[in-house]
Image (cartoon, one colour):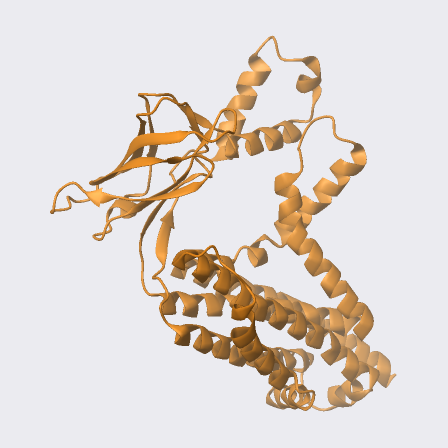
Length: 421
């Protein structure tokens, strides 16, 4: 494996891949900040910079290394070096694992350089833990709604005859986007994890309000969460971050099931989606530590993408492997958006329904890979939890590449035997 790694590493150096990526990273940090514009606030400027500069470096790195991975094994096979290597006492697994390690080494160097340039700017805000309400799973709520719907004698016959899985999919999507109305002088209470109220430095409520007619209206009310509270006076259709202050100097211990309460003291009826529009933020650790975790997540995803490119390269020619890789990557990126935005109704055309099912299958198959959002979390100040990083390392950097490299090794051995014959 060491010799295979060195051969791939020298090929990447001779092709100036590492040098070009380091130069592009430096140019992104020194040129892009002069081009992009923010909303004038410190938080907005930080988010725009992190999305544009480290995000661009991450995108360029993914595209470049996947293209390289799609050509390493294919080029060795087309130049008949693969058959010569297979004659020597080396396993087929080492022939594909070595190039993967070389690609990951390039990615680690570039991402470390990117992290160093980002952290060197200084002045970054600390990251925060993000907690969501502890609610009944939408699938379970949809199941109950379906049972009530089918037991109702007024339910139309076409709904009764519709496939059960389609009804559950529709009702689950509607349950996720279900609005709760808050009438004047009424309150909305949502339970949260107990650790959300255990932060000694206070918490921040992030809520997006709207109105029945989607018009702007005054938001007046009081937000209470554990020992903290705050008065709200703002307009709707905006995500409000409401810092909560302790009522006393001594913060009482967190209750077992803390509840975030919003009492509407205005004259307008307000609406909010409990599963999407309400979060509690608590202080986490420094930006530099979050940047380190984000860099590790990026490296895990790049490891999977390179393993996928090597798998395609072991079976296809370089142009076909590259084209296939980028088409599948585009589908992977678009599938979650199609699944979430497609109007899942009973009367959709069969062709649209087939496309939706294909997109759902792709989204399900790639959910573990597309789940990490290092750039987005970093830009919004969301703390990348160690558990999420561990899951990304286990799935994207170990399990998935192991499966892909095993399949690639079988194909390499078969192709090498065919060339020897």
